[in-house]
Image 1 (cartoon, one colour):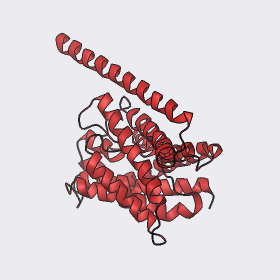
Image 2: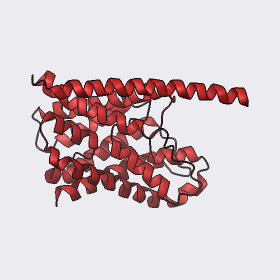
Image 3: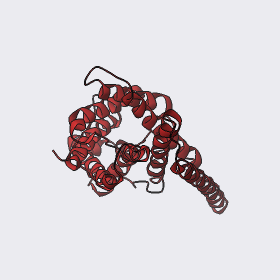
Length: 274
């Protein structure tokens, strides 16, 4: 199996099991309906573990553009392979989403709330606030990449690493996921959001493109900085890229703050004209 195909298949498995648990917990007339956040976090953790077990030997099982970028910035992955990995991950996420749509086919029609249907595919904020939402995704993905690199630096019984990474995902979900649904993976959010947009889902609403930049930009910045932080702090090899990415994070956070102000002003104008 080629690395491209492996990343596509592995990411598809990740989304089938991850978005699948979201569908099971949230769609009406599912036996798993309302089983809660712990079930969702466990489902996503096991989804990552299974995806890594499936294709780790062929591609390293990044399954996440933020991980790919973090490893490239750390120097553990060639930059020339980054575009093909990200493309494979995006395609796999769209394919996996289509499988979830087909698997739960009769449940879309009986679930009236369009927001619930979108939530099966893409993340959204518990409290809409660009600055805080972006910061949550940066922190969560930073912890993900530093955690993966830390796990890799330890010796485990052969074959146990993917299982430990799965528990890292569960931990991030339980501790940090309650604010934005912890995308921590641009492909995991953008691929399924595209699928939601193009699939003939009964009674679906808009795909919330206005928020979609948060679960893409945040993980890219957090994952990239995580790789550079590990290289600089854990391994003592500080590079100029560390400061460039840190500066980029500050700039984007400032922009998100201005976006919040504009959003608040628009809301106030709408209330006055209503």
